[in-house]
Image (tube, rainbow, N blue to C red; front, side, top):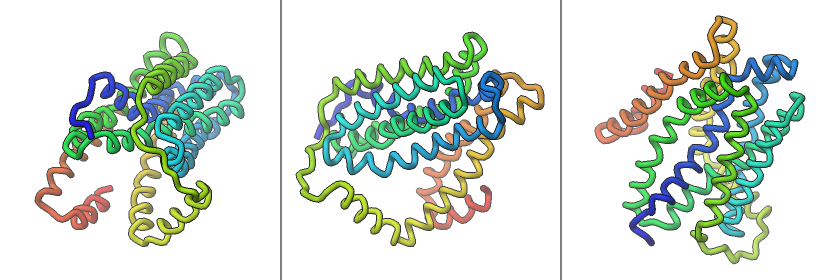
Length: 285
């Protein structure tokens, strides 16, 4: 295993780690502009975030086993191409139906990055180097929910909402090219078991775990509350008279809270038991 990471590879990791958040949050300040141009309702525009999250969830089920079977880089390149094509379809959409379908496929491509980049780090580097990579990249991930709406608001204000998706197409192309230049990080599995049968076996084992189900429900509940606010807030703020730039700025405090909360929790775990902290934090939530 390696113990040093080239700067170009670190930038590649950063781009992959942020891709899903950029695609999720960058267009939020443009919700009202998209709604008006497509002549649709607030609920249908909000659905574009819901279908994206659905695509992210469904894609992650298969990308891990698929990358084990045919290789991380091949699967990741395919995901980046899928993301880029679907994002271009978002840009060209003139109806809400086409926009929703494109957002779903866009998510299927984007989630390949969020799943595979971490696996590549673990494949390539020793434990200490992997920890250093994650410690470097994760603050960027935490900043993404604030940076993405700000960038989206600036693009929407100066060149219209479609320019947001042009920027995401460019990012997808850059990441696809960068991925092609990367060596394979893990040996391809030689198992004779079909991938469908392997998925069924693995997920039967997972969903029979009460510990997994409990933790999943906690995460799902907290995420549901957050994303319900994320979906509705652009419309609420527009109705209150705020601009797209104001809406973009409104996500900065939450991002700061995520960063402070994450690092504070890590510090508290050095002194207190995790299960005891979890109860208190859930009460706060």
